[in-house]
Amino acid sequence: MTNYKLNEEKMFADVADGIAIIINSETGIYYGMNKLGTEVYENLINGVSAENILEKLLTWNKDAESKFNEYMEFLTKNGIIIPDSDVQNNIEVSIDEAIAAEDGFIPTVAEYKDVQELLLADPIHEVKEEEGWSPEKSSLNEDKEDVARREAKMELKK
Picture 1 (cartoon, rainbow, N blue to C red):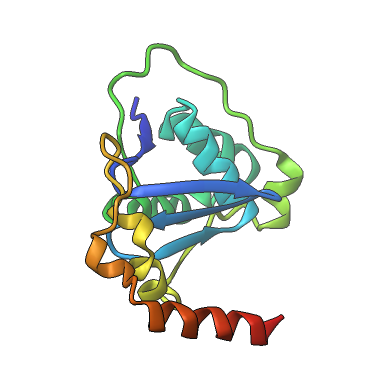
Picture 2: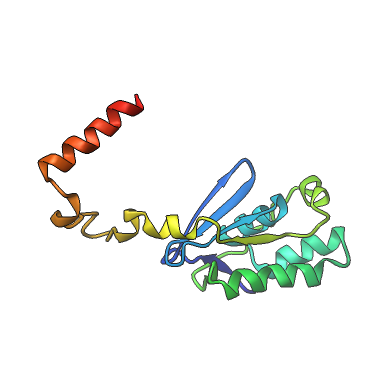
């Protein structure tokens, strides 16, 4: 059985309203999944084997295998998920058939690069878990004229 987990060294993931959004903190690329893709992803990172998920999808759609394999290849090739050998037990698949049917029994994931530069420019990427975020003093520019100019701009926006 093949089990996976989120590649937490590179990826940050959140699920909101049944949709997974995963951000690669190294490249600034983010990924969005359809609802079935999200359910498959959640099953994977919760310890369900890829084989058991595929078996479940095949009970609903005999042609699901190639699309499932494409989905899995995309996740692994892009480093979103990585093999997990620490899984101790076989967890039951939990996928809503109505959601699977709504998405044509095809889990999908899409790659987005539209905010890549913004995500990479965000100083939070410089955070080190053991040290926290500490920008260099020179980047803070404490020049009194510059500070006054920025404060004036803020007042204009109010």
